[in-house]
Image 1 (tube, each protein chain N blue to C red):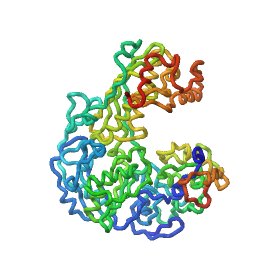
Image 2: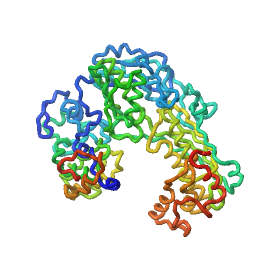
Image 3: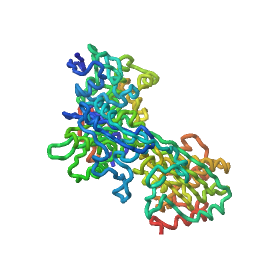
Image 4: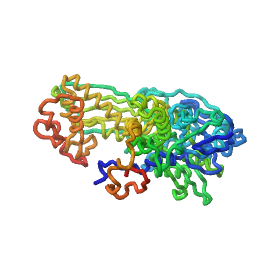
Length: 177
Length: 457
């Protein structure tokens, strides 16, 4: 079988009924989709299949053969964050980080099809995603910031010069610091 | 202090939003095996026999570990503090909660490991089980723990945590009203999105590298070393990227068993609990049973408190004695009650061992105290905000264990809440501060609790 992930074609040797999540993580070493529950309940394994967010833990790999699969690794890089990534970073939409890839894929798909979503649209799009850290407030704020285009370097405040020694030392281009 | 109050970027933020953070499950090593556990199908049972020979012969199975493979099977989470252990790493003679691990299997895949687990032959004899902490403390309850139905090893061989402060008999004799209540918060699962996951890698030099999602890295290292009877310098722990813990990853869950499987098979072994295992077998926040009687005056002073707490420790002690101790120190909540008679027991049930969750031991009594103070206000017909402000901890008041408060936040917090909900306070209360008591706020019954500072003498 062949599988296109993040624009690259891979030859897949897993059995046809192997969950897409397992193929991505264990065979292709693409680890952003997480095995949070492996029963479709938490959303942490969400990837895009031809642009649609799907639970990769429930999807047999054979069912997506010939489709374009996109994971979080495929929408932006540390050097060049996608708007949704920058917004979650700047608005503290990610805390422990484990649910974050799923939320980001669902948000990315939402903004592709509906660039100016209402609060209800956002809640509907993210309703299958579980986060135990944030209480969702900062996630909603992140999605709204991304929709407004409210991301970027000029939002930086304060600069790292204000931080004490021992504060984060690794900064990337596009960081708000 | 430039960093305090500033919005600083998270040091791990970019890695989180780009999928680059390496959680334990994301660590890639070659030649890795997967682990699965044979867990008790009963809440309470005797183990009559166990035979792993068929499992060991299964294709793809590389190691099976039972209690007899563990150099030191029983080790207590609080042994470093001199408290004896009660919990076997793998069950030996009996199982005391549903899901208790009896054996673990390492195989080429999760499916092969599960098939190996199912090939283990085990004979169990089911016994009566206890699920309610109150019923477990009854004198005629079935015995479910070799120490008795509650933990007997508090200091000086006390079988409970006890606090005596002031003259509680006088407080109850002087009271206008006695207000009683029973409070029973239920268990809560911490529910981290990342289930318990560990990866043990045998190194060529004989050491083990263990990738762990623990919240307490060095603590877990000590636990593994104790079970293995190894010096710490043969273990390398890698951790710090935790996919949610909330107290549920304080107890050492996977690390020791994957270490044993890795040593026996000579290969890296990963164990990733299923969501079902996380719900059924991991530690939860404890259920509690709290009985409170407060001696109060008509004008709203709480003169004394008698309290009995039963903490549901689950099947084994783990950190529960520590939780009950914290609970006892905080058993008056955010309020100053000078005369106290507190008894707290760590009661065993056939539930999974309970553990920390966000304010270990304290959230339960905060819940009970806040409900109880509101109940007092209702009985007396007094404004519940004003009752709270009057009895609130102030600078110079002392806690149940005689710690003198230097930075109590009760008064400003309650004033802030009253403002937020638009609650009109009486004039005297509106401008209240947390400054040391004087005048009407220092009645006779509160003088003595201030005289002893810090060390209780």
